[in-house]
Length: 167
Image (cartoon, rainbow, N blue to C red):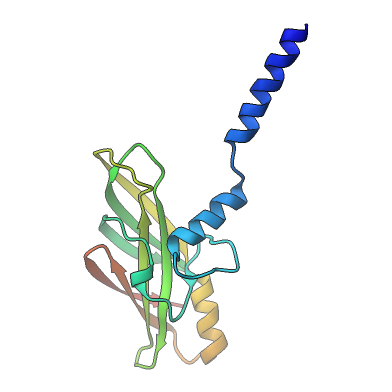
């Protein structure tokens, strides 16, 4: 009975020491996305991240290819392909230079990819769905309803996408 108690305590200790909390993951993701900046909030890559004035040179950019991209209401759907298969990859869309005074108004975004040092060779295709509501709300806060759309220019791995985001 004494040995059983010791074994259970050792197993539980190993389990708790090997786990990380979700907050640690979010904090680490913030640090990976913005290594030179201190972001005061948890990053949610399911929504566009508003970081006006941030240089895309400060963001993680592992290679990937965009197969297609389009809007469905306030959701940006992007299909990407990349090498990997052994670790989880993270994609975050960052609005880094918006709203440029032009007609129509433009916003520059950057699709960051963190492969988490995944050196596996499988060709992976993923579909990303990113909520663009924060960008739309910020547009309405700054401009009111003067326009029904903006041009979104997304810097991707080696290419630039131009899409019309209709409200």
